[in-house]
Image (tube, rainbow, N blue to C red; front, side, top):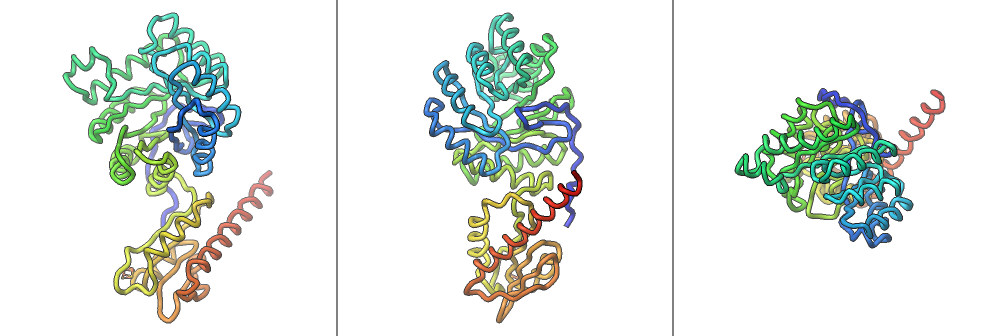
Length: 371
Ligand code: SF4
């Protein structure tokens, strides 16, 4: 198995959202958005914690009014990962959350209104080292662009983005990232490709309102997959009408599939058939759930029989091949031990956790030697 991705990433300017670098040579970050009431500080903090535990790099929180801005300040104090405040129109909210320690402002400069207000927001961002995300969405294009193009098109999305960018350019503010989202895969992909060729800033990818857990995952994977294959994209958000934790999991699975980022266990499993010597589907699902907490990258193969088992196992850290009367486990590609079906999941979990611990110890050792 090739451990490195053959994808050549577009070279973008690096910005920082709190302590997370976005763009340049930074790993593609995975983000989500809370769907709690921002005024419910405890619930929002708890959801951010769940997202953090799932591996989220950045979390966005909607800040619709000044009360929510104050709540945001308290949420920020109780959270460990960078938070983006999602603001529409009201520049005062942006100024307030900038004082309260926000890590990134999602606000479209063209929607702020008077020039002095735009200037105030940009100054607050500059003084506090806060980047801005320009977020264009096919569902909320400016009236005149809707008229000019008749309907949302990739060109309309890009024109809208370039307008917002112009506001920042005029104030010589370059610390921003941009998204041009649409729920239509073709439209989003075309808009991002066009924008990627025009600016040097990092791009935040997303297929907006993609759908429910299954349909949204498929739509997002196809849309984001095409762009990521092109080397486009510095941070991603999968929009699902589902628990936001699922967005993080799907985001990482996408990056793992393209070898753009390694986190947790990369499972290789066969679909199973009548040749299987243990219940592949049940074993696979059980392991995936039990090992959700693992963040160390590891390749694990779970294959029902000898047709493909030994071949896959050779390429993985832990490989299981179904066999009768016992299944065979490979460690680092070499046959290591036999496992019977009655305690298969428990035994396999233990072996995988041992391998994770071994890998972590080796990495800690390397860090000590290097320092
Ligand atoms: S690896 Fe074996 S059990 Fe799995 S699908 Fe192929 S033939 Fe069936």
